[in-house]
Every structure is written in structure tokens, then in C-alpha cells.
Length: 176
Image (tube, rainbow, N blue to C red; front, side, top):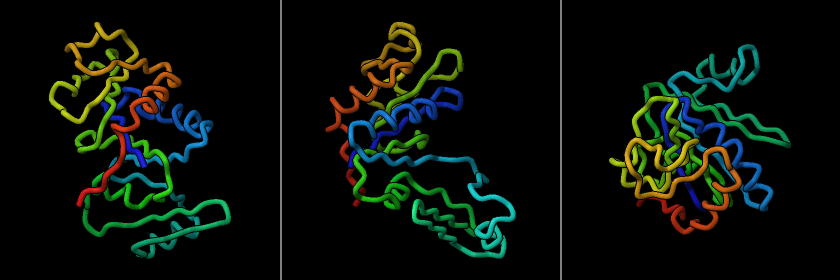
């Protein structure tokens, strides 16, 4: 399994990039999973549905399955910030790539997604886990010169090619 984090501030284009990479990797016969960091009270369930009603009644976990999908919703009684490693441990071990969105403070190899228009600082000067920058501008338009490869955020085929060419950087090793 290989794991890569796409890190950047809100509005930088992380979700769009990940969304574009998934079908391209799948077309190559690769199994892709996504681990995403979400805001505090996100919900994937809908009021009135059986699983929602079970959660509202106090269930710690609700697992819903059909012949096409499985969903697990777990309620934490106290706020608990899970690590990216905890989320990856929940995924199938037979996956080829895990695309991680968010978790910008994790210790996994990262591609920083940065847009000048977002007017946010870059993270790569201070983050030793960043291995490349994906941006919508030229390398010389970055606010700080980068020692890392600069990828075209608007060319997901090139990003996939770079990931595959450098796949050894992303081999996942669970912490011991």
C-alpha cells in the first residue's frame, strides 16, 4: 500500500485534485481508498433514516451494509482526534493507494496544494514531510523558492505520472 497526503489550506483545490486522481488511478487497475480529515460535526447520515435513528438513540457504532457498500459510523462520547494512521488501519489492506486529504501535520509524505489566489502561506519551508508542490502557477511564482518538484495542479495526468514514477516514496509503514 502507498499513502500520500494532499495538504493545504481550505480553497486550495485538494478535494478537486483527489477527485480527479481517483478515476485515473482506477483506469490503471489500481484500488484507491481515501482518508479525509473533516470538520467537527460532519454527518454522512440523514435524519429519519434507520441508521440515523439508531445513532440518535445512543448507539456507539452503526454499521450499515448492502450487497454494494458498507458504512460505519462511530460516535465518540468525548472529542477524539484520530491520527491518519488510525484511519488507514480501518481501510482494506488490499488497497494499492490511499489518498489522504487534510492531516497537514501528519508524518506521511505530502504533496502541498497551493494557490496564490487563496492568499495563504506555504508550508513546505517548515514541513520536512512535503515532497512536492501542486500549484496552478509557475514554480517561480511560489512565494518561497522550493527545493521540491513543482506539479501542475491543473494536470492530474501529470500528477498521477509523478506519483507512479516516485511510488517508492509513498510505501506505507504503520507506526510500531
